[in-house]
Length: 491
Ligand SMILES: *Cc1c(COP(=O)(O)O)cnc(C)c1O
Image 1 (spheres, protein in one colour):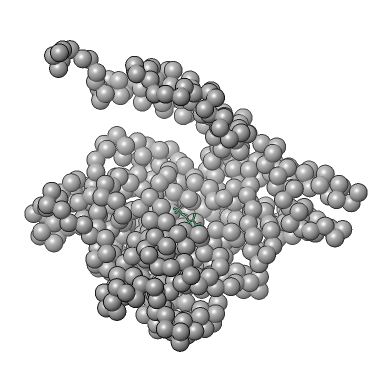
Image 2: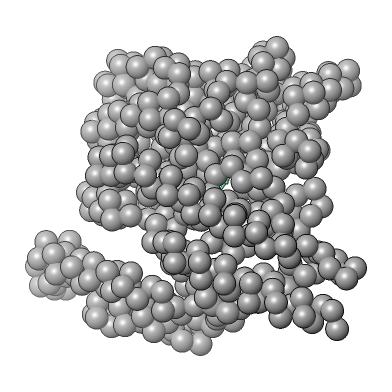
């Protein structure tokens, strides 16, 4: 047996950290310099990677040079380039240098802030930054720690939805009896994100108890208060228990906004937990001209939004605010001897493990804090406004071409449009062909949506590097492909 000191293995050597992290930073910086050269959507076929990389893990250590070479040769070709200025798909996950260095700090310190004592600064900074962020959105003080509410950072809206559903469920079942779980009903529009359906199942409420309420073109795909009211009355008559309403500010398919105030009044009347999902468009509400979409938020029980979508915060970061932290804590608290400590017992501290699913917790607050400080509200607003301006411009380009139409009026930086049906050819067929041709070109990447049975193309503007010239090139590309498709459609 060798002595313990015979091995020179030193995985956290500070000099190596300095050298190798510089190599990685250089690598990433080169990547950004060249990002426009790659096809935006990856062109690889399923299984491509197993042909390139060994099938088993190495026994001996390898050099970072070798590893980075494999990242270049094998990984980059299999990436869809979310930070490309020609990425217009889904909703963007916009990165920034501040988000990156914030993430480096989080990863570099690598502490685990599940309870106050496990790293007091992690908890206290998170509470502070959640109050900052809440004030940027002009949330009522009832959602802030300074006003008896509070906020927590999750990794995703999906987690935020599961946690709030669990809190709402337990609050009601404690009173009515646990056997009533099959009677609980969850309401949302048919445009709500699929995460609500997943979350509902995860907290043990039958999927058949989700009321996916119809929306239509005429209402801009927002949920009608009257439709909600009727659904609730019907459920009560049939012996169901209305539990939870998820209203969306900026739906995923087409950016629709539910009328928070009117829906909130109904939720109050029936004692339903109102959650506002503003994953995408919440970021825009830091600008006074968009804030009105959150009017009525004071009637909600919880609100969530993802800075990792549109607020220059690298993945991952979801803000969740609740008015009654104790409802969340009641549901999510965990107790174990090895976690006992005096601070917790004093009841004077936040233990974030009781506000989330996992025990372990990343120091995401550091990242969001760096993002807010490094950009400042002024540049964050500039960022939102310049994306919206580009989207407006793209919308006008589309609107001026008679072959196209805007399908849903634009509210934020998402433009929903399509080629008009032609020569009796189904619009969905033409637009599928158009999307295919645009994405196949590698020059841009967009995705599609369907609302009211209509298939349309989504141009989601908001990648950090997107400039006017990229939007102009995108429009040229779309026109070029449309011309070919329409020419073939007539023959
Ligand atoms: C993106 C999105 C989600 C899902 O967010 P995750 O953080 O990926 O779970 C939920 N709701 C809306 C409206 C979204 O746009």
